[in-house]
Length: 329
Figure 1 (cartoon, helix red, strand yellow):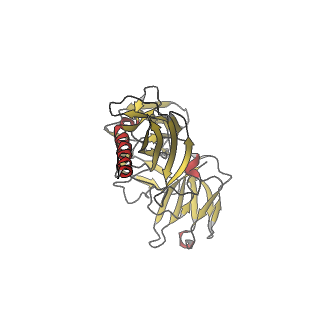
Figure 2 (figure 1 turned 90 degrees about the vertical axis):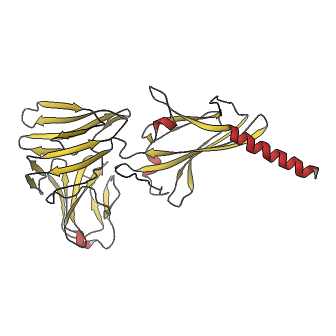
C-alpha cells in the first residue's frame, strides 16, 4: 500500500512539473522576436529554444536532452539534430529538404503559394529533482519564402506563346505578406538600359503593368521584385492563378509530369507520359533553349545556366498546351 502511494505521489509530481513549464522559442533577428509571434521559420532563420515557467521566467534544468525533427510523409518525425546543452538552437538550411529520402510531409494554406514543412523540438530533462517532458511544433517555409502573391486577373491583347511576348498587358496583383519590407516593379529599356523602379506598399491591392516573371513588352521588359527581412526574393515565387485569359497557359499545374524541381543536371519524366511530347524549354526572356521531340524518360539540362525556365508540353488527355516553371540550380 505504501509503495502504491509513493508511485502515485511521484507520478503526480512529474505531471505537475510538466504543467508548470513550457518551451519558448526566440527567433534570432536584428529585432528579436518570439517564435509564436514570428510565425513560420524561413530559410536561413535561426531560433533558440529554452525552458520557461508559466510566468515566462527562464529556468536552467539540471539535465537536458534536446531533439529537433521534421514530420515525414508517414507521420513520424525524422531527427535532424540532437543536443544536451542548457539552451538549444537550430538554423533552417535547405540541405535536409533537398534529399529524396526521407520524404517530408508538405502543408499548404488556401490562397498561399508557399509550401510548408512541420518541425518539432522536444525536451527531456530534470529540474529540482523532477522530470520534465516538453515539445513545441512550428512550421518551416522554404520555397518560396515570401511574399505570398496571388494573381487575381490577367488580360493581354496580344500573346505569342512561342516567344512569351506580351503587348498592352494589364495585371492586378494582390500581395499579402506581413514580412515584406518593400515590393517593386522594375521597368528597363532593352536598348538604353534606363531603369525605372516603382515601389508600392505590400499589404494592398496594386494595379501595375508588371508580371511576377520577367517578360518583354515592345522595347521594354519588366520584372517583379520583392525584398523581405531574410533577403531578396525574385523569380522563385509560385503563381496561383485565379482568373486567366484562355490564350495564356497556366503556370501552376496540379500534376506535373516532371521531377525534380529545382533541377541540377537531369529533368526526369514519369513513366507512361509519352503523349506529353514534344517538350520545349524557354528561358526567362522567352528564347527557346531546348527542344525534345521524341519521348524519353530523362532530359539533359546540365548545359543550361542557373535561373528560371518555362517547360511547355501537352496535356495527357486533352492535348492542351501546358507550361510549368522550372528552377535550374
